[in-house]
Image 1 (spheres, rainbow, N blue to C red):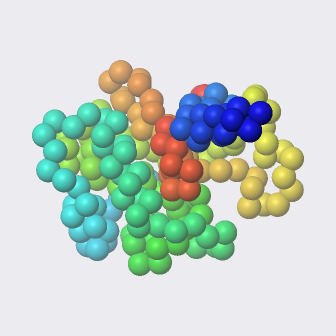
Image 2 (cartoon, one colour; image 1 turned 90 degrees about the horizontal axis):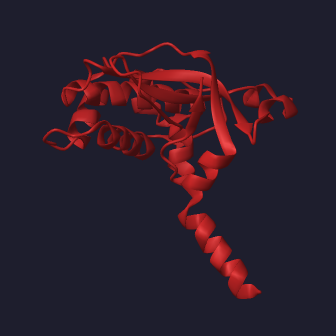
Length: 180
């Protein structure tokens, strides 16, 4: 019996992203404002962290932006800046700041790698549904009334990737299930 439990625990750990995507769906309530990268320290961080890639695909760029975000930010439940140009100094954010920082970083990288013509990262405010049930309606604190994530959308093909930079930082799950 102990061996079965160990095997199950290892399987869940190894395939946590797959399990999470099967159980949890993100639904958008609307978009958050975009933030252009104007701070020299922010632009420097992104450019210094971005290797010279030859013809990267969209998934590589998304994963690079997630890694930069996770390296730069630490989670806090306190009110904090949501503008990435200020987060570069404070280094602490809640989900709104994580999403804004990631979206800005991703958009800078998309431009750097010549993918910005069709691809765009868009911060979203939404809610999580576990097996189809909105979990936010069971929580009464204002902090958990919604959750921010990011969609990366292709204007030419309509293809959409969704990520939760906060989730990536703490559970190492990159892509999430998104439903319009």
